[in-house]
Image 1 (cartoon, rainbow, N blue to C red):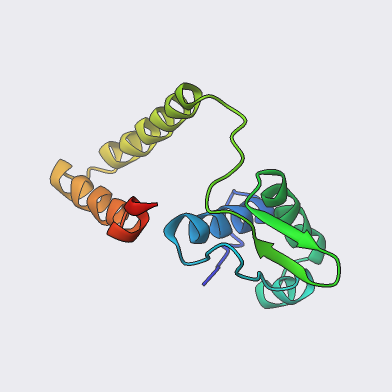
Image 2 (image 1 turned 30 degrees about the vertical axis):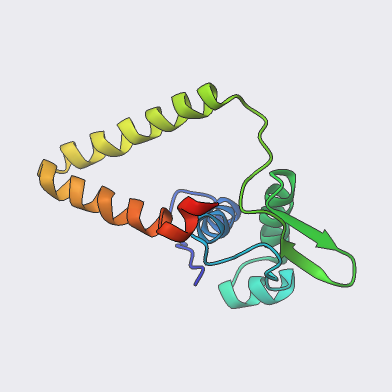
Length: 133
């Protein structure tokens, strides 16, 4: 279930885009699955329909969804269109992980607690079914 936080510093369209990406990456949304119509999702979330439309356009540019006139928006792929090399993606990912680990360390979380969180999140995205693809 997609949720947004109105008190978050992350823009609403970005929260929507990231939430849908997360659902696609975890396998909750599979290729061919329909997304709610823009106006419906905007109403459900209590945001302007242009905000949802922007998130859908960004997802379409990434190759994750496709919009078909009269048929709505559907998940197109479980992997995004690669615009960068694997090395660039790995470098960007490592930086994001360092930032998350910095937050955890500064919050005083013990290492074993952070490792448990990481293992739980990894398990949510890399189930046996996802490994076979």
